[in-house]
Image (cartoon, rainbow, N blue to C red; front, side):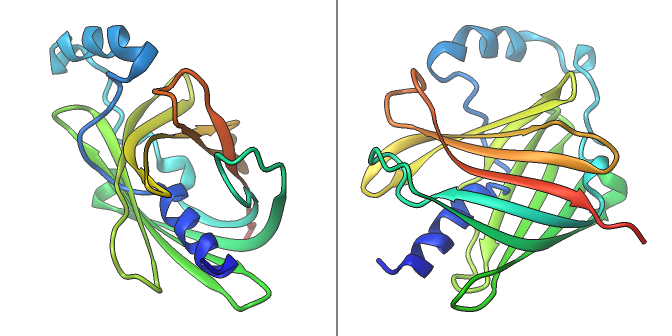
Length: 201
């Protein structure tokens, strides 16, 4: 696969960003926590419908990605881009457009984040302009200012777990991190780190 194709593939996995589907919090070491959470009546769970309000606006995106995840590689590349996020459904969904600059031309990624009022969780789906199809969604929620989202998918012929984390959220910056696990969640390898800085008007 070409390096450009690899970037696109990882973009789809990463921007995981993103959306929607059945949560996998019942994975590995988190199964007991997930069961307890699922047992809670929806009325007792926090309304997270505006948890992504912080993301609305225009951002400068600094992206670092591991070239060959799950191979022992330690080679990273760094890309710069711009992300524009628009509110949909009064904040219960949003649409993010990421444009990354590469030596072979720009890469465009579209991310849709949707809130499910029944489960009170978010699903994150993404697509890039070259494929026009949605990725497997990651699903999760925010707790104490940190968002964790999971899915299970096939990568390089293997079934793996994918974890996306939103953290370090302030009015003018935030961090997105993607990790893969090929051992059922016992260990995680970070392969994608995006740091956004808000563009002031």
